[in-house]
Image 1: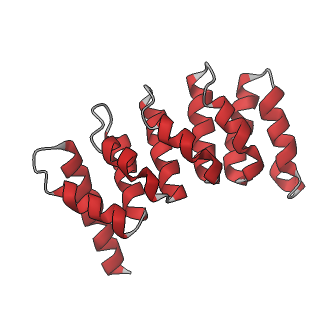
Image 2: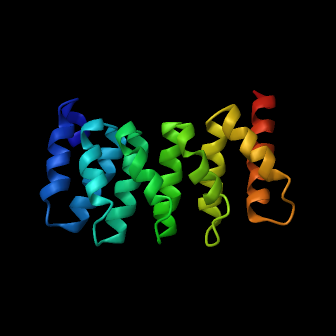
Length: 167
């Protein structure tokens, strides 16, 4: 319903995400903000990154990553070290969407995430999407035969190279 109200609906959704006391409605509003990709939601989404509810935090970071507002860069660089792997995963996606080479060291570290393959994979994809500098890091790491980092780097490089050749 809100999506059908046109370009001006983002403000209504932001307000709903800010004030709703119904958890399901708030979660839905946060998800819709990611679909709308309105940079005006970035501030609220980054505020929600510190919320006590882990599900709300995860959805907020996922939506912020979809928006890819450069103002989120420092937050994503911090959140890539969050205790929740789902937050680290979305932060890596956000860093990839922003494409800032300043994030390469944080993403390189996240390639070795001890807990979750998805964090390593999203970090590798983010590096790949950064172009030559990111791919160079993946190529260096791919030589590490007995490491999780090397495994995911080889996977992303192989998969991405074969996709490019097929196109």
